[in-house]
Length: 290
Image (tube, rainbow, N blue to C red; front, side, top):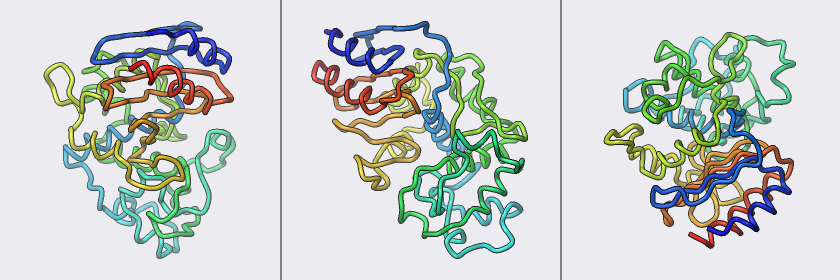
């Protein structure tokens, strides 16, 4: 694979590393910096999505379960009609119906609240769930919290035997909320190879070394277009993209991008203020070579 144009353009946008595999074989790798573990920011959400799929298989939750039942003890004094309609599925689509984003990275260090579940549910619900796309950390955080409550352990240790260990990923660091529970909307630290393993697992429909690590139907459902977002669509904590692709997507250019039609995975880490430029460089320079 000719990487010269990609290296020049992505490097100018402050990419840190790229790995490309096709048909299960590595076809390109380039590192601008050490491949240490880094914050993958909102790409963490896709790992929470995987946890939801596993929890569904284990009977810990249902997508149709109402939030007023799942979080019965955390509800505000007055429950709006919009909140009454919301269910677990709405935590995964960025169409929860709230008025404004909450639990975003620049805000979290300054919250005085320590019970983020109660605080998140108390935020105004201005629309019926499923009707308006609004990118927010509320949904994936609550989804992660529900799994942790039902499983009786934090999200990291829930995923260790179910996802991380089968992929050969050692115990990772993951941001926690004020009560020490995993913040499922962001803050997972992985290196580029570990993030790429996740993308390859998704390409293989959840199957890994003779074991169905993720439910095949969940991989198909979560990475398919579930809602409109003004772009190529959004799944269950996965972004849809050009060339029938889907991706885990994190701030500053953390991507593992799956191209099922080409049997290819591209993983990029970056420290870029020009995230779209990094993504477009993948589409422009790498995809035509598949």
